[in-house]
Length: 133
Ligand SMILES: [Zn+2]
Image (cartoon, rainbow, N blue to C red; front, top):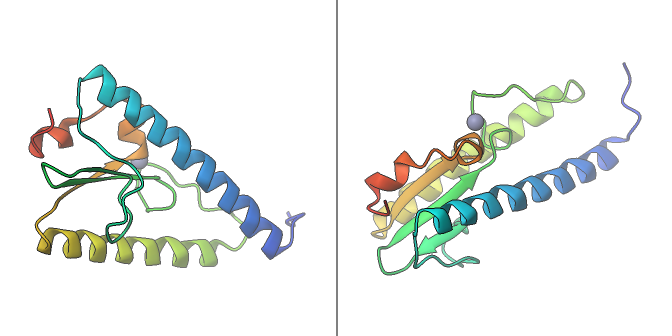
């Protein structure tokens, strides 16, 4: 099957899909914070790696990682077109994620990476480790 979109169009579509998915995952996480009476979070952090949420007093940084973009093995959604391109991109994201986690940890932040699928299922066990639950 041939792709009806050019590589550039496909790339733009995927970017739009990504940002929409990020928003819905972040909104779901905010709902969960409220349900669990978790307070003290901030958005739009300018910390390295731009964590989705930070708890400045506790020095906890939270990333809500999209399963596709960050290479979670729960899903296999690599588009059949340009599979090598997407796999390389996901691999770069994973390398960057590890570097960001390391950098923040060295600066005294506790980093929690929640997968999109965990957030959707309301699984927040990782927040216990960070002292938020
Ligand atoms: Zn997942």
